[in-house]
Image (spheres, rainbow, N blue to C red):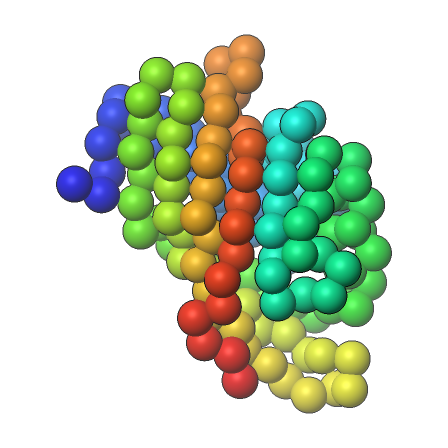
Length: 137
């Protein structure tokens, strides 16, 4: 079953992902940073230098630097599964991105995030996000 656990937690995890996506679209480092746990891990294996990032501040700094190259990005997210067990959860999220690359070429990337989440002081946060490209043009 792809969606299990309390509905209120699953809704909060969806909203966490929507906050993440809105922060990308608005280039809001503060909102984007609010989605991560302090001891988090982010893996973007297809991006040189961002293959394995550990710690919230390292992750946020790398994101801020990367976002300078995507002034016109549109980032959308759709859940594929959310499984909640107490104060921990796993999720699979599908993404669609449209942007212009450094050479001025319009690009579209569709991908998948495999997430581990933790509930800290009543709020969900990303503990680990691993991205894989499913389609790129």
